[in-house]
Length: 246
Image 1 (tube, rainbow, N blue to C red):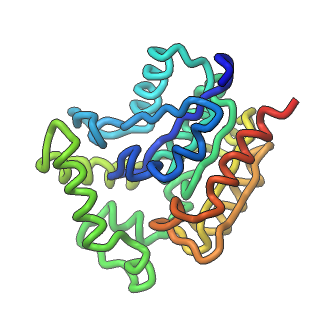
Image 2 (image 1 turned 90 degrees about the vertical axis):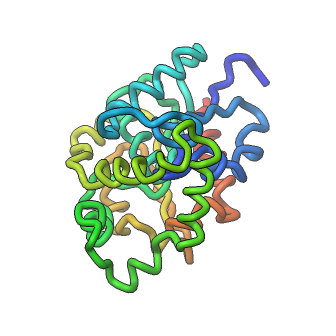
């Protein structure tokens, strides 16, 4: 592995950690380059902090890790909340992003299924049966809580705090304009499932707004199983390889 090979930066989904998001993908990504995983505040092994979760804070924390590792640029791969953070980096720290793959992430809250945004604004909101079927199961929520209790310095008590702050972030007024997307210089790949949390027409709009964007929609795929799709490693490595092509 060459010392000047650009590393991969993986950014996990909300209520997840690096292992639960990318554990199965890291072996495929790390064959010819380093892979860096940053667990955001209140997730994985990183303690929760006072104040809200914001993309600006996540960007600052993530760049601080790259600075500490003396990594000037990275191929960024983010899932869900991590995809939102990847877009935040591409817009506001473009010199640090060699390429971006945003998996199951939208340009703003309006690009998500309306029921999901309403659930984060109002915990009592009951989603439609179709949307409810896409949400994590009780077993999956229990596994997330168990991971948090085992990994996080805050223990089991930190899980509810993290979920509340993550929900507040999703329900807040985040996002980027078409003009900001048009100025993204890095090659981007937008990936989502055909039955994802992000609307298909919105994903097409994102592809059209970003100059060097690809869009791939995986068939028979939901938000909860997209990271396990067998074609995903091929798509991720293709984006990285194409970005480094002379």
